[in-house]
Image 1 (cartoon, rainbow, N blue to C red):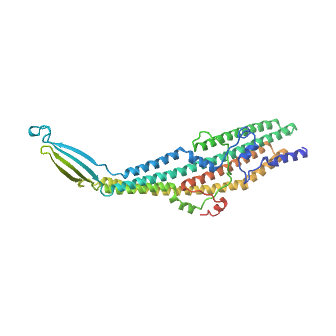
Image 2 (tube, rainbow, N blue to C red):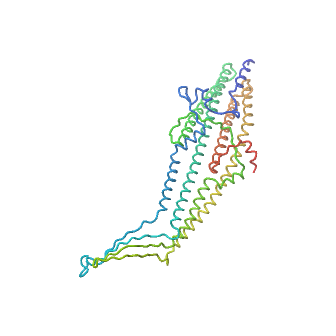
Image 3 (cartoon, rainbow, N blue to C red):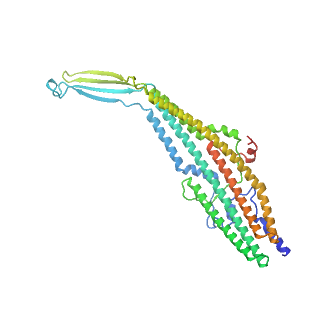
Length: 447
């Protein structure tokens, strides 16, 4: 083979077509503008979406979050209702009429009009108000937890869009590389240095890469639409998500994360539920205290045309029913809520610990792939490609090296996505946002 042809082949391979994405690599509108076969066409302007815009859209348009705000409003009405007094009772009673003898007609009738009012004793009204206020606290904590859940889901789906964009870029690079390798194979075949079978094999490889590129394109569309659902749209109105998935934000060490468990949204809801159950015990105990009913009215005697006042009071005698069963049930439910609180804390601690391990392992994997394995595979592929052009290696060696390189690149994207999703899940559980530099944070995560 002429020396010039070999040198030209090397220049093509070294011109960046096989470039391994470096630390500053980011899929975004700039890439779309340079690739006319990407999702964005020349006739359609690019609308790029930042994470902050996505979060704001979700907060403003999510219907599930609005339902929680309605629940908070409903509980406020219940607080007002719990503080209202029992309505008085007005009674009218007619005696000694429509009988026989002297009691026929209404001449001997006695008419009584009495106004009665039940007075709750033992602080029942105050306790009902306190319970309703606890319900409001639970509703507010549930709203906060739902908000954190929504933000976490939006972040997770946003990361999925970034990962899909990167996979599409890799699929596009692989398709371009396969096309150039095919051209090289054709040159070897034309010069009689390779059999026709190699051209057929590389043509099938090119078709496979085109199919993977189309699949990556469809997955990106699905990822964008899934993100748009969080703010109530069936179809995305943006083309690209702005962000660098290779930037790995850090997080506190394991002991610091465990200290945040008790302040998490999940624990706040469970604590409010447990406190409310404790107040139910107090309400059950004072419910055994009988209420006092006082009455005042007047009585009219038709026979003598006289009248008199009537006054009285009544109270239940707590001889048999002092709400013993209600108190026992309330105490049992309170004990259950206390147990649920302890179980929730243990569950969160376990989940946080598992996520912390996932973050450690995925960070280490992504770092190893980017800094060591991918550069090694890149050099190996270039050497085999040179060797193939020189007749030292067969086409199967080139195929294996290429597929290994791009499979590892996709594995790198998978590890990046897994890291970001694990961090998002950690933020959801703890209700915190971690934005420290990844390297600095991990340097202290040795617990």
